[in-house]
Amino acid sequence: MPEYFFDYLDEYGNFERRKWLELGKRHGREIAETDYPYAVHRERSGVEELADRQFLTWWGELTRCEPSVPSVYRDRVKAAIDHFLFTSDHGDGRKSGKWSEAQRLYDEAFIGTYLEVVAKKDEAARPKVQPQPAAQPATSTTGATITITKAEHTGDIHRYWLKLEDPSHLDESYEFPDIPVLRIDFSEAPATDTARLYAPSSASSSFGEIASSSSKIVPLPESRSKTPQRKNPRISWEK
Image (tube, rainbow, N blue to C red; front, side, top):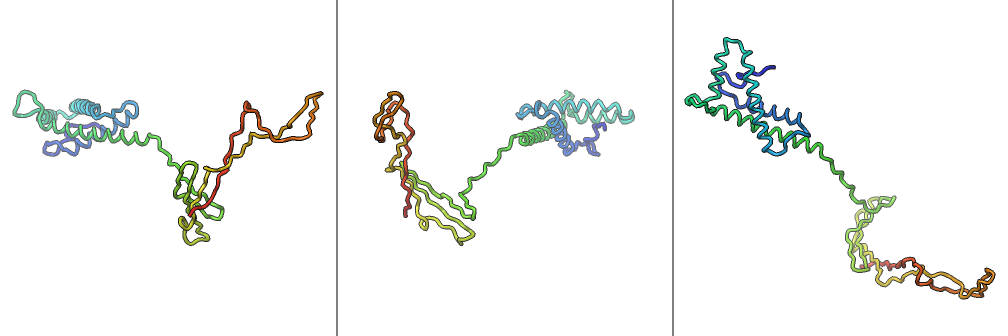
């Protein structure tokens, strides 16, 4: 449907602010949706220039539609446009305050709506971060749970404060001092040497036969690799 200049004036020939705001919003939304994502502006300065160009382009199209107005109204339309565009008491062609205010309303509505549409589309296109599941306490098949509420590590000694819950059998939870602190101590733990093995103390290779009357534990030569020693911790409870 063609638009006419009078569509944006009230019955007294004054421009309606609401209509110029609505026009700017409509154009800002349409252009942002058409140009997204490859041709949109995300800096306000770029959108300001775009709004100015769009307003002047639209104004030219609007005034070019005027010849379609019946000739009986043509002179009246031309006089209304001139009155809107130019200051009546100046003959130097300066734009009137009406023109400046109409363009300001259009530009602000265009810029705000354009940036809002781009921001919403950017947010919708951004990959969503999936929440990581929280660590679950150890749970038995009976529904009882043991949770570590505190841990303390000093050298080779490790202490753990525990909390026990069993809704099926216990009316309340239990923790320190009702439950002692679990202590795991590696500081004086003996090591298991898995690098020793049984081997004959003496042997003869004559004709492939091994002659030996006894066996004992002997260490492997230093040049051979050893299996890492494993410490056996002392586990106890502390009050």
